[in-house]
Length: 198
Image (cartoon, rainbow, N blue to C red):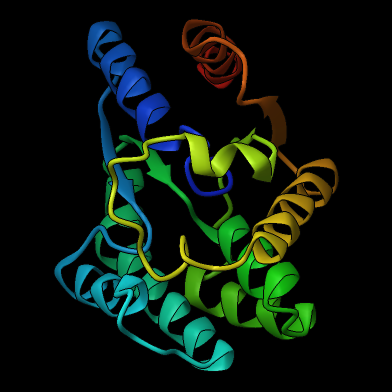
């Protein structure tokens, strides 16, 4: 399963809570993230998120998909073959929202490259945590902003609109109000995840 949403929407917090739930339930799982999850992908992450860097939109797309290809082959698919669950912070939907909707790269190109990078793998469940772009500045103020978090409010608005549209259209996606109390959001995610259990 994948947790998605705009920057500072609470993905990492909810992922930690869900990982704790999996441990308590005795569910074998791995917790990973994108970009990242492997040594090569973490190196790409540093390039992509470095606030001093300048990355052209098309190069950005290729870097994300290269990272995803490595992550999928090295970490995700082996975990699934072992019978483990995969809990991932961001996956394909992030690229559709950020590079497709916000950067305005052609969506057919984005989807084609993503299909190649993932070998067609799609999550059983993607939870999109939705928060208004106006909430961005008030959350986690002590954190040093990365390159994408330094983008304009217009960019953040496009990301959110992209996620909202995608969540309504993509198979296995659910849109949750990320402004609700932490425990309520967690409980709703657990309910959705429990439906996947045999």
